[in-house]
Amino acid sequence: MIPAYQELPVPETLRASVRRIMRVEIDVAQNILIPARPTGFTYIGWFSKGTGSATANDVRFKLQAGQIHFSGQLSTFDAQFTLHGPCVQYLAELAPDALYRFLQDDIGALCNRLEMRQGPAQTALSEDQTFIALLTRFHQTAGETVPEIAKAAAHIEAAYGNISIADLTAQSCMTERQFRRSFTKVVGLSPKSFANIRRVLHALSLMSDDPNLGLADVANEAGFYDQAHLTRAFNQYLRATPAKLAFDNDGVLRSIVAGAS
Image (tube, rainbow, N blue to C red):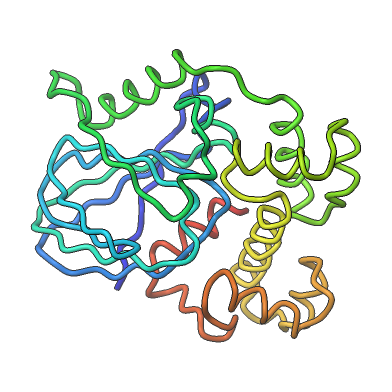
């Protein structure tokens, strides 16, 4: 069973950059396979306790207490974790343009990658407070965003992906190529992919809220042409059909659905 994340409150001062803060604790040593679960968002993680290893996209990482990692748009590979408990990991789900503002780098180049760095030194603060302090430092030293892209991403989110990319491009006063490249650099995905993932996550949320809702109705409410279109999108982004997703045994999937609601 994939463990579930516990959500922590996001301080008001961080809400422009951080959508959610989560914590997971593993009490005993175990191997965990986390399937590809794209969300359209990027993450900062902190491994506050324990040791282990992770393999993702054919790259193996050693995990040790104190490390932080930046996750690009993780959409096409599974992650295998070997953890020696007890282990504690924190994860901050960021606003679409936040990692770009934090790193002032091409987030599209981080697609399907993890970047590991040494994290904060041990302090007298609690683990929760230490992670909040880390996020606060990133937020306070963040660079500028690209306003047209931040606005476009917010419109896509608000519409659950059901919005004209051509209209957003026109509103940005950029060419189609300029808009696509700038959006990918800031958000980490093309505007079309970002919108498609938002639509898939909205469908997941509908399925979770009402397990008796038929897939044809889910497809219609989430903005897909039909049930076949919905199934193709699930296979593309979740590598599973809607009927084969097990919410009860997948804590990561439940957490993603909670964030999509």
